[in-house]
Image (tube, rainbow, N blue to C red; front, top):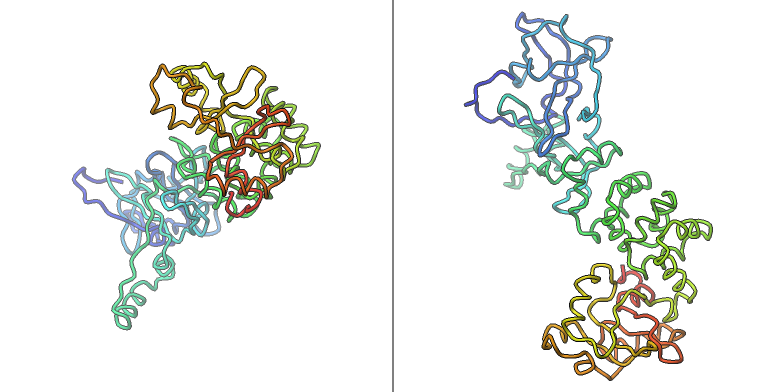
Length: 420
């Protein structure tokens, strides 16, 4: 739009732009505004032009650079109708009225699903930028032309002023189509939400939106979110993926969570995914799948660290730094002999406080609290309650260490609503 660099910044709502007449310098009406085209750039989408309806003809495109002004009554331009071209969308550009109005979006700052009632633009620096989404009741009233009436009524009856509820575009993730989910240039904004909140959002969406959102996540975020999601929805989301895609995500999950998920899948689907998984991870999962879900063997994870008693604190800490990122249970490490019999446990706190040259045998706790592979959930729960531990090692009849049960894994069995 033609304007000086010193122009004041003006905010415009989409509801005030739609259905406006477009008039050229000769007073000729070129059409009515029916939509606004924008390119999705960061941090704010840039309006490229207005879509006009002229009679029964095709939609015409008025470039933003040819708009001279937008006021309460009309939009003015300096070109004639003969110079307007039919609108043809191109990659990275969408029609905002069609794509966003009355659609659901995620407020990534508040981790909530909201409905778009209006859009707010900033007119500045010779351009028009989408800067806010209006999700409030006042936005609805603005669209039907009742804001002044409502404001007067609320002020007279309740001495109350209803304000706009605006969300910065920087915190908005559209959901209405897979294209919109992919249009964030910097990164998918859903990745900024805590996985537990993202799981809640997924559960509130319909099945088509849920699938589109989940498949737009990077595999690490998808795995973290899947761990927080209801098991039935986990199965639905993974079933919609091919085996290769599913294996990439499941490999990022903790072993115990991955095992639980695969156990809930149809046998053919689970076997297909296992064939695509890395061999060592697949073997660990198969071992866990062999145990009943509500016994210690079915609750445990085999992703933990164990050391020989003569290892020093500094050696143990170096291993933790190298391997810790891929380990489910990191707060306790176990001390075993050459035959993998459990001798003791050392907490991460113990390691941090001990001298670097101390050997683990000298600082380990020999008062071992453990359960057997076939112990049931009640026995395991009683141990957690009695001893106040964060994890319990699982041993076989020969006292050989087989895995460890984290408290979260127990909760997912005895109190699923708390474990997720």
